[in-house]
Length: 352
Image (cartoon, rainbow, N blue to C red; front, top):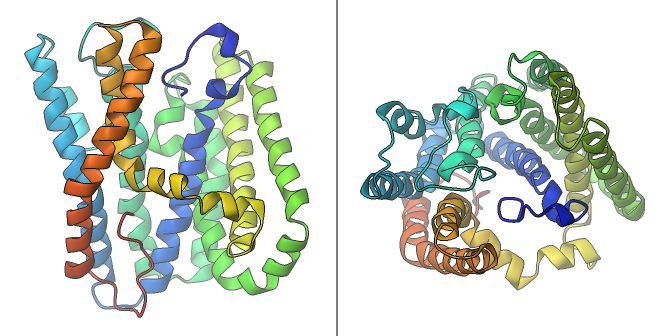
């Protein structure tokens, strides 16, 4: 919705702050990937299996979508330069300011970010795999080493965002999002070691912790207002970059921690997360994420905004459902059979 809805009257509603969900994604990813690595550390060829599984989950759909996108872009008279193609095929947009990598498939309104620009978060994710998995594996998950590295990342990343030369692009770089990933990683290590001791306390005061999460999110929204929703100075941008993302990883980490504690119970949160509709969205979410914005931008140029929004959502849901059933799911099943972790139960569901 943050990508689709831009009307000023919606400033105080949810779509305005949809970008905050990206940091939730990074916290979740740090937790999931570290949980997998901690469970397989020491197994023969664990790193090889990990990278094979990650590649089979991410690469087929990603590179197919890129191919379709670049061919379509050329067919309407706007072929992308070779350097742009190279950046996206190597995921290097995580290290290049996004203002240099945004794509354009068809003429678009000036307020729309172009094409596959939203895939910067996947680029960040890929280099997280490249850097973090060897650290956990080669240190054999030695806790003092992991905690030292993660603590340094949490402390240094806000300063990287603050001092980055062009703060307009600081939010979408790997170096600027390391703390959200590190927070999820640290939570995974702590949860593996402390889950049984922490769970009763977290369950008893779960509602209060949810209130704390709401307060932190409200603080993040207040910082957005305090530094100016439309930030006119580099100082506003730097202050926002350094503080808001830090508050967000704290909020999402706490939310994840409490949700882990109450999972399996009959509480409202776990009941909602077990809902069939949300589980279905989870299965098709990767394709939805990859293709939704190019589809919307293409439709937006040929029909009114409200019609384009509904048409983009409907068509993206249909494409994502078909992709999961006939493209992603068969690859996921083959991945499970060909590259399986040596344990009684696989820590990674087929759709991950």
